[in-house]
Amino acid sequence: MADAVATPPLLLRWQGWLPCSSGQQKRLQATACLVLMALLATLPVISRTGLSLVMMACGALWLLLALITPPGRLGAISGWMLLYLAIAILTTGFSPVPIAAAKGLIKLLSYLGVYALMRQLLHERPIWWDRLVAALLSGSLLSSVLALRQLYGPTEELAGWADPNSVAEGTIRIYGPLGNPNLLAGYLVPILPIALVALLRWRTWGQRLFAGTSLILGTGATLFSYSRGGWLGMVAALGLVLLLLLLRGIRHWPPLWRRLLPLGLLMLAIALTAVAATQVEPIRTRVASLLAGRGDSSNNFRINVWMASIAMVQDRPWLGIGPGNNAFNSIYPLYQQPRFNALSAYSVPLEILVETGIPGLIASLGLLMSSLRRGLIGLGGEGLLNLPRLASLAAIAGLVVQGATDTIFFRPEVQIVGLFCLATLAQPFTTTDETNLIDAREQPC
Image 1 (cartoon, rainbow, N blue to C red):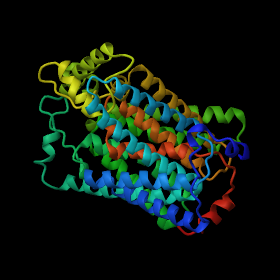
Image 2: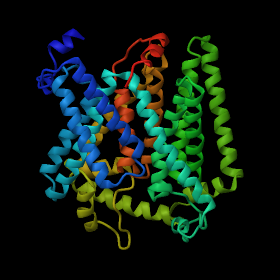
Image 3: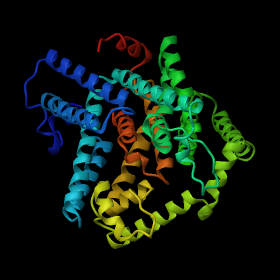
Image 4: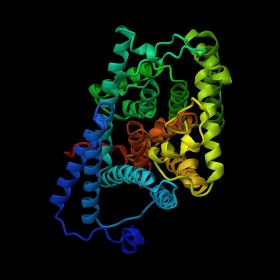
C-alpha cells in the first residue's frame, strides 16, 4: 500500500492537495454518508429536479473528499469505468447529434460522481455499508408497500398496463410510486439479494425483522408486477446469492459433498421452476407470452425496435451515435418502422452498441468480468465486505438478465443501485474478523 501511495496513477495525482485535520475529514465523511443515505432512501419518490440536485451534491462532496485524501490505487472496476467514460467522450465528439450526446455525457458524469463518492466512503468506512443498505431498504420497503396496496384498490389505472393484444390480456400489474411495472421490478431485483445478505449479516432482531420484511414484500411486489424480465432477473439474483452463500458455507466440507450438494439443490430448483411454469396459472400465462414470439404484441414491438437498432449499429459500429437517450431519440426515427416509436433499444447490450459502438461494449464486458472476479472473493475469508460482495455480484447478475430485453437499467432508480453494488465490489480485500466487525459497529456515524 505504501508503494501505491508513493507512486499513484497519473489520473489521481491531484488528490490530497488540500490540508485537512482528521476531525474535519470525519465530519465531511459523515455528511457524505447522510447525503447518500438520503439519495438511496428517496430513490423511488424523489422528483427529477431533486434527484439532479442530490447527485450534484454527491459529485461536489466526492471532489472535496478527494482533495483532502491522499490518492490510492485506481482498481480494475474504476479503471474500466474511466475507459468507458473516455469512449463516451470520444463518441460525443464524433456524434451526428453532438448537442444531444453532450447532454447524455453530462448525465454519465453525474452518475460517475455518485459512484466515486460511494467508493470513497466505503473505502474510508467499510462499516457504513450497513447504513447505506438500511436507507436503500427503507426506499424499497416503501415502494413495495405502496405497490402491494394497489392490489386492494381500484383497478382502472392498473388496467392501462394490461395489453389487450397480448397473450397475457387482462393481467393486472402493480407499479407503486414508480409508475411502471417493469421499472418497479427493475428497481427491486438488485435490492432483494442485498436484503437477504443484510438479514444474515445484521445482529439484532429488529434489524433482521426490517431486512426480512423488505425481502418478503419486495419479492411479492416483483411477482405482482408481472414483469417477465423482472421475474427472470429475480430468479437469477436470488438463485445466485443462495448458491454463493451455500458454496461459502460448505467451503470446509469434504470435496465430494462440496460438488454434490450444490448440484443436487440446483437440479431441485430447476424442477420446481419447471413445475411453477407449467402448473401455476399466472406464471404459465407470462411464460406463454414470453414464448409466443411475434404472436405477443410486447414481443413484436421489441423485435421491431431491435431490428431498427441493429441497423443503427451497422451504420456506426465503432463510434456509435453518442451517449444518452437524447441522442437515441434524435437518430432512431430515421430507422424506425412505422408505428413502432421507442425511447431506447430495449436491450442494454444493444443500447451500449448504439451509443458507444463496439469499444463501449468491450469496456462494459471488461467491467462485468472485473465485477465477477471481485465478487468471488467473498467466497472465502471473513472480511468486512465479503458477504456484501456476494450480494452485489448476485444483484448485478439480476440486472444483466433483465437488461437482456429491457433498458430499465438506465433509469436512475435502477442505475444508482447498480453503482452502489459496483462501489461495494471495488473495495480492497481485507481479512478483518468477526470480532473487529462487531467493534466497528460501535463507531458513531
